[in-house]
Length: 387
Image 1 (cartoon, rainbow, N blue to C red):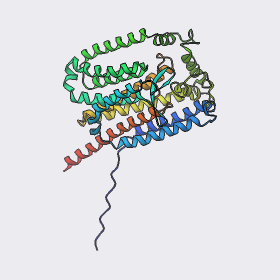
Image 2: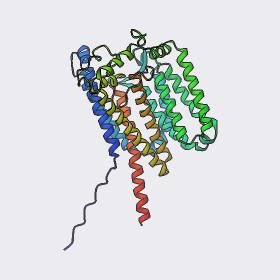
Image 3: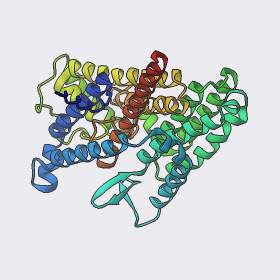
Image 4: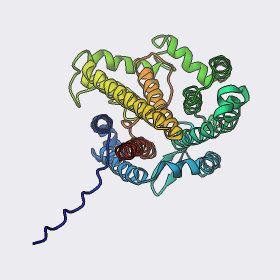
């Protein structure tokens, strides 16, 4: 009597559990805080208390669908698409500046409207910059490590994107892109001496841009002494600080915050962290910071694993994504707590927004893809050695 052959096991898709938990927790806490901080706005805008929470839920679902698509895309494909994507990103930055095409909000033209969904072009460009820089460093590793021109060349190209961002204006996103590029070059093996010179030049350029622009200078003076400018340039910061002060250790309770009720501007977007500080207190703040810390640490660990496996492009993409998320989260939280001057950067995976949520979910999916490919490569190597 013949014994039936055992059914082949389905291939197990390796997921970094710590990273997945951190991402899902950030999405969940972000959704709850967006709902809490925007219900009164929904009543004002559409006579519907669930207007913003429902839209944010749709954004998250679309982001997860997009992430599933990205997760199925091999890293080799991203490596081939780096340069075409960079050109496409520059074209998008040009298109958004065309009168009547770009959507203007609060004096800045940063969005494109696509089927009712606002896409913030700067978020797309951040993702493209990571892919492009990883490809450039992989192709020109020797130049990056030993030549000052090798460091300047990609920054010259990215400066075109930054100039277009400054025309929107979006100084914060331009800074994030430069930080991403420089961080990736440093981790790619750039020598310390020319890198320090480069940091000095970039910092000087950023300082000049800040001090020669009246509205940026106004933000800096408001940041230095917000209470003296509490009715103008320091208004957002003072209201945010009041939020943290009211929250104390355990918070006033979810939904019980007062600052979001037309005192704190952009409470569901740029200043969501302040609402969280008021309603969930120091405990909530520590939880969110811890989750971002886990995300950054796991991301760097995945990058190190890819580098050890000889996958330089994948490792650099992982480093770039982590620098992006970590730096942007740091700036957003720093602005909310009065550590940094006010900048319009959202809190990754948490703040309200359709285009940014979709792009960030997709970016995290790339990180999961790198982990999967490195794990599969390791398994293949182990099987080869055992044979």
